[in-house]
Image (cartoon, rainbow, N blue to C red):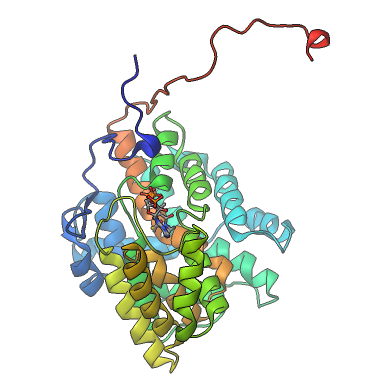
Length: 374
Ligand code: ACO
């Protein structure tokens, strides 16, 4: 018989992993044993990707090789680009991304795995997500089509692909830090979705397609979009208090606050807050930063909740000029590294993930032919 129901699988330990450690009480986050604060201060996104996939930091030669590989893997089949151009230009970019990841599998079945060859798929998906997003976004905005731009880091290429301009050094580092902070987070909903799919011995691209679908939801990756929408709606710091209190009185959630695992401030939020301020200062626009600081004060006082990563990511992207509906796709462009690291780990130590439910429905109903039902 099934035991106690843990709604939302809260606090359920589903598997053993060597990828990511979260201490929700102390506000600590480690990737493969390295503190996120160290990685955000010193590492590149490519180094973090290597770390998550391979379990250790790369040597200089290995890092150089990975950078070359990622740059070489940025292109996607022409047929896929044509398919992207055929999609409705008003589509939700997360739907576009999910469709493209799913379609990419058809063009490269040998990379999809499952098995050790999936590392090729992991690298291609990571390298190609900015290209997919850039190709679609540029077309819908009537910007010039995306053409290769050699020599850019992954973070700088993401900005170039989306915005048709190279970032400044400060912008590139802000994006790189945001990518590092989003790269993995243990068994969050989208990673769990990826692992469930991989655990059936399905392929890597199917697992990532599942993950993109899970990330789309506003309780997960979609929260940062709602944060910026709320900031635009509120407008000025003086109006924050009234707006937040009114939302709480209506029992509405304030996006960007609270977390299933962290009982203190999300350490990623602490780091990104600083980048939101630095970028705001550099651009002479501290409006978002000031609104956010006021929100943090009011939400904590009224509800005892702390900010999560999503509170600050939207302000960083907005200051760069990234449109709101690309925030979650940018999240995906980073988290794909974590998803694929978890899928590789799942293939390595496979056990079909198949929980049970406690059935609470009726058990003694008798079938009646359709004509006899009222
Ligand atoms: N705003 C208002 N109240 C909140 C919020 C919030 N953001 N978060 C939690 N609460 C309240 C709940 O209403 C509930 O209050 P109650 O006990 O009075 O009913 C209490 O806090 C506990 O909430 P739960 O939903 O049980 O907590 P859970 O662990 O499921 O919540 C979650 C985690 C879903 C992230 C939640 O905090 C939330 O909805 N936050 C807003 C969405 C968000 O920012 N998501 C991004 C997460 S981080 C990421 O994906 C990178």
